[in-house]
Length: 219
Image (cartoon, rainbow, N blue to C red; front, side, top):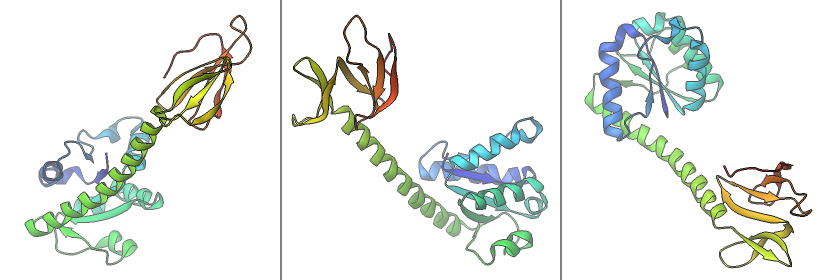
């Protein structure tokens, strides 16, 4: 989830529809992470919250009298700041920043959820910030496709890999080599068919998982 929602459940009648609005306008059903059930009643709630903040890029702080009084929302925002997350305040009530949030963050830009114009501006900003993340993911997808385009070859009884142009990319050095799967390829150590072990290499030909098994399956 790209967006973490920090809020007080006393404001849920306003916050829940607002989160639904963000999901619908951005066009992603679950782009927001929000605690709907009150996980602080569980034993591992701190780990769950920290993991959600670690995984997100944006923390949307729903600023209200209730959230300013909440110990947990304050901890969430401070933790997010420490992890370098983008923190965006959204006013649930009142017309300005106040309390510990203003003291700590100064006069940062904020939006008023009661204003349709400002809500629209926020969503456009969120789209822009998420789009940057999508471009990074596309780069990773492209890198994965390049890995898949390496295929096993055999020269003088030893196996390596070539790219789609036929250029040898990973020298032939193994008893046997197999197709890449999820970024790794299974290879057989060069001994003999009666005495060989299997491990995994990356796209550079580096042995990431040592040849230590008689049998292994692709990822």
